Length: 299
Image (cartoon, rainbow, N blue to C red; front, side):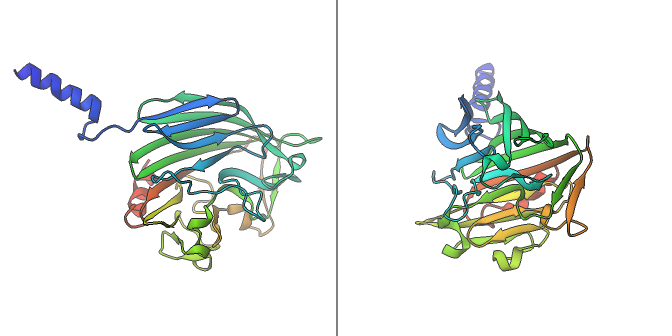
């Protein structure tokens, strides 16, 4: 009888996890130039890396209610592609705004290295290139997708940038990791953007250093949103934020360089950056964003 109870206990742990709650299964499928990610058989996001695009990006980024919390190339901002990483004004090239001839971030490989259990891990290698110019940067990305709960989905985006030559990035508000929220959740439509100090909206958050910003709003009778966090190990941590009430937010060190003109990086230098994206139900308090950052910074 005792042996039967032990076997049953082991089976329960395997099926439901150590705390008695069902394990959330996360899987990924690669098809041509995108990787689709499912959480408990529900579509979460696609990581798109087509060579016809300016740079790789995530779209959609579905929240717990199955609607995307991000948007794609709104109106006057065709260079806002949901959730993405790029940079303008790099050695005279543009790896952010529209126009492929001005520069592209091209994926050399994108591999699913783990899938089917409680996380998906994707590794990619990318080259920054434009016609008639040597490539200034190569980057390596590790993307880890987990779901701490059915109301909280998590993307860890770790990138290492290798300088292939001396690099000068002129002062620009278009740099590095960025998110563009769906219009339904924008401050201009009643949503909330708040940083770690409790400052709100574009007026309260623009240009301020903060480890994270959360952006959320109401859809019908539900609230959901997305937070972006900077890891304390990052260069330039904590970077000041470029924010817009219409739905854009990005920790953007290149808009506030030390000499107010440019950022310079040497050939062979590497820059390591880590970001965590939390796609969540509820507001900043119910989603426990501050507590989630404490967990992240100890990682």
